[in-house]
Image (tube, rainbow, N blue to C red):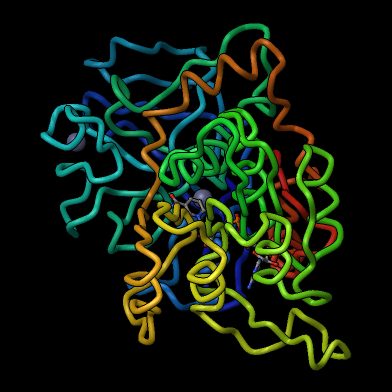
Amino acid sequence: MKAVVYHGPKDVQVDDRPKPRIEKPEDIVLKITRTAICGSDLHLYHGNVKGMEPGQILGHEFAGIVEQAGERVEEVKEGDRVVIPFNINCGRCWYCRHGFWSQCDRSNPKGELGAVFGYGQTLGGYDGGQAEYVRVPYANTVPLKIPENLSEEQVLFLSDVLCTGYYGADMASVQPGDDVAVFGAGPVGYFAVVSAFLRGAARVFSIDHWPSRLDKTAKVGAEPINFDQEDPVGRIRQETNGKGAICIDAVGYEAVGHHLHDNSMNPAYVPQDSLQVINWIAQAAKKFSTVGVPGVYLAEYANFPLGQFFQRELQIKMGQCTVKKYNEQLLHLIEVGRIDPTQLISHRMKLDEATKAYDLFDKKGEATKIVMTP
Ligand SMILES: NC(=O)c1ccc[n+]([C@@H]2O[C@H](COP(=O)([O-])OP(=O)(O)OC[C@H]3O[C@@H](n4cnc5c(N)ncnc54)[C@H](O)[C@@H]3O)[C@@H](O)[C@H]2O)c1
Ligand SMILES: [Zn+2]
Ligand SMILES: [Zn+2]
């Protein structure tokens, strides 16, 4: 079968690989019909995630049709259409039983965190779903069935970015009447904006520097702030009469810095500033509020603005989204037409074009979300 394989930094290729088979009685083999590239895949693509080795099949956002089911699978059957959360959950360990799905104690024998599809050895070494087929373990727990009236494309982002955007708004505890600032207008930021409004936000500011991405969040009601043109902290404080906003970091450690002094540089190539967003939030957040951080941070981050967090009595909640906590509720919002996730898609491509698709999504700009079909 065809599969998108990591060969090294900025080197992703479509290779021929053996079709997966049932290995355990609770496995299914899924025939993939839609798969997407995530901002988290770009961390791998940039070669700075430990445990990622050449040969890994990529992809943790996918939906498809059950091709084959193991003998102990009861919850889905051959022919069912399903969408799969990016994190792998056994459904029976203490963490799964208490709804802390991302920290499943059994799915990842290779590390402390729960496993994730297509994310290297540290997160379990499972093959990903940017392929024609994938093996899905714990099939009595993991899959979410797709109702007949919805297409795979409509529900694809329940695998990750829609749920993760909602997770950001939930961690930040967005309440009716809040003014909210969402840093990053990529797919996670886009859905954090949508989710903040679903939870009753009065105004939502969307901060990025890609006009095409800010246009998308503006279409769902956000007020765009381009950080190449103005200082987001000053603008948020001014718009909220000095109070500040409930803040969500949908960027993470690959943030680019604030380079107001040099607009001549292509923003894609200015040096990264890992704590840029956290430093802005430390000043722009409403005092006593909780900051929601779905953006990914890796181990080595010095100069965290602890002093400002202490003085302004901010709290912070962060981590991998517990997809299963939200995907059914959000599915229903799609079903009744309250959310249309397909509006985010800018490119539909063949899996064969994955090398080009990664390059495009990495350049951001016009590519707001890329969906591939095997
Ligand atoms: N917690 C989870 O479970 C989870 C799940 C999915 C994705 N993520 C993470 O969420 C983050 C966003 O994912 P995505 O798919 O939207 O990625 P993306 O790379 O497409 O989007 C990130 C956006 O942030 C913008 N940005 C960069 N520096 C900025 C700054 N200083 N201020 C404001 N915006 C800035 C970029 O221009 C880009 O548009 C990534 O770190 C990703 O790994 C986490
Ligand atoms: Zn993801
Ligand atoms: Zn578990």
